Length: 113
Length: 470
Image 1 (tube, chains in turn orange, red):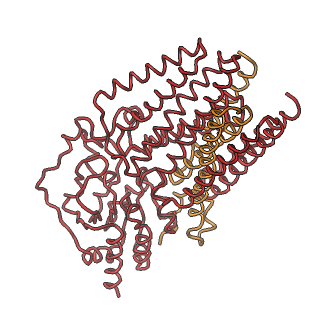
Image 2 (cartoon, rainbow over the protein chains, first blue to last red):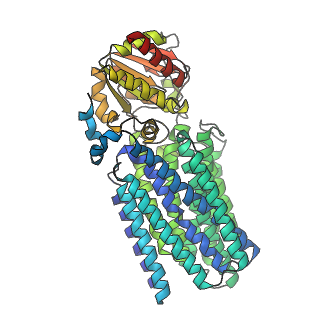
């Protein structure tokens, strides 16, 4: 096993653990935006699609590069825009409660009349 | 590693850090938007670093630049257009389509790499092949599986489970073929074998999702999201790129956890979901309600009287509300009731709508303050104090049959709507929910049925309350 592979595997495993840890406490309110956010992050595959271009010099290579770039760009741009659109709505509503925003959703019961 | 490539790698590390921080900020509604911005910044850093790398390498031909730029611009335009125009109700389908293209792109990266390696006849064997195969397998399954999932939610493909005769046998055959060619490729470099793996995986993706019922689609989409992440991480191994490995692993892990949270909310195991949908077993028989049970229907005026003289009203929104675009009307009705000093809250079932948290998004769109939205554990004890429970377009999540064993939804946590003093159900017809069974709530003597489209019903009730109270 090469050193490069060991390094890659180390990064992979640590990133997996971080991924589990970082979203552990997300309230159900944010599950949909969170899925959308994770969805846009895997748009990073655009980096891979662009790198196809480094070696592409045959028709097949060009076609693969084109389709991959198309797919990945749709993923990354659409993903971020739609996540932003969703979160904007969360923010815009009930401006009077600006001060309460820091508290979790469940803690808002004292607001009721 | 020379200074230049080190700098590029550092940029990727920075991008990865942005993704982690961005996801972390998604933990609270207060910081979520900033989280998305941080994550976007990370993505832009990674893209710029890659472009610099491409220019520095200098091996990209003119034709190469053209296909990359045209492809990326067209893709961006399609992504931007769909993200801007999609209805919030159709959000899960869109996420599913983004999974499809993400997974597809990841698979293509590996296919391309394999073609390059094979024609160069060097280093095609060994560990890289393992990652190539994993990427191609997962990416291809995700591609077709996500398209089927989106088609089901959009109504292009029937939402009920599609059972193909001998489907299990075909699936098994596909797995054997895919793994067989994959095993062959570990010893012999062969492009045709890779194509067989791709085709078998594509077919498997279709057959995997077709038999799953529409109600389980959100969990499937979340799972496919995790798949896409994993495929991207595998692509990272193939082309030796840290940014892909870290981002892919992050999504794979967080998507996996999210999938588990969703499955838990429906009290179903992932295996149970993947092996077949609702109403495919013997459960349907046991769920029958006697056919001649009495159903009371109610008109706007009577409903308005109940609402206007209640002291506590709990609104139970479901997908029917979203489908009818009634969220603004409901918010208006709730505001009217509140202005009369009536305590109004919303009971949000974890899987109300089409995805966990989907209902929150839809009500947020209608400017409902989120402290009024109560999660299931919090609201269930309050139903017994409620004068009226107003169920709008929700079905299976209110069915008391879930408390008994032997029904299709047995064990699924439900909202205790039947504990309220009276219940008004707004529904278009007596049609079934996704589980395909009768709802015993509708034959409860305390229940009145208001047969109408949710938007129309809410508007009528609002008007009637206004007339009533002057």
